[in-house]
Length: 177
Image (cartoon, rainbow, N blue to C red):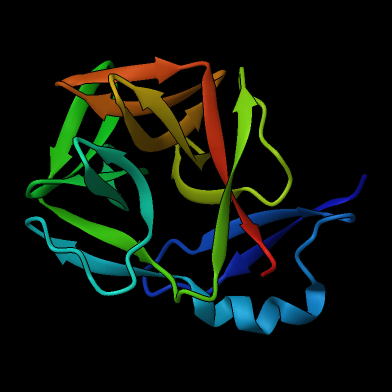
């Protein structure tokens, strides 16, 4: 199976990257549409721009996908209160300045079940650390669903001041309508 990386235009320095295989359901002729579909929009102090992508829920509230720079990396997480919260080094890190993933309603993100470090074709890279891509994931925990990043064999996300590692998770995959 041939794998190639396609960068999708974004408003920030780090573009979204999709990893496609030759049998991917994303049609090559729609690539120009994809290039203008996603955007990372700068925000701070709890702001959520129009078109923000929901990555989970907690206590009946939507958790929007964000990312932020930290320790020479860019880490995906969730907007909670006034911050972008993500897991790092065993802790939940809170950053007041971040970017929020936005997309028009016509763009469909599917969440595909995965576990133990597996990722399906078409996954979305939403950050990096130490030269490694950080793939957008989410996992169920304590009655909620929390967006995070695939690291080694887990989906890592921040919760309750700690970094939670879940071996069972879902990976964000862009699908054709």
